[in-house]
Image (cartoon, one colour):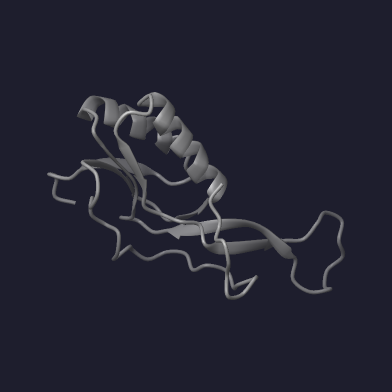
Length: 138
């Protein structure tokens, strides 16, 4: 799964939620993309599940770009641990996704196949998504 090789600080504050994306809002690399329409934290496991679905559906043809990277650590404390005693250890990594962010891009396959692959991937993600293409006004 995706995670940073090295971070400056092991633990961090909670990621901000809400707002609208200003960067990564256009299809830059491929011909078609999957755009988030709601805000949510997306974990590295969810990104990997969506990636697997896309590559399996297109049978490893074309090229896929993952435009988001989970670099924000989320901590958790074990079950039945009393309150206090500091912050928990790093449990997993997330990326805070805002509305308008392009999460995946694909190229080298026809539109109907790309649309179905992105639809299947959207089911694996906690955000509502929309299929976009490069020639569309994003």
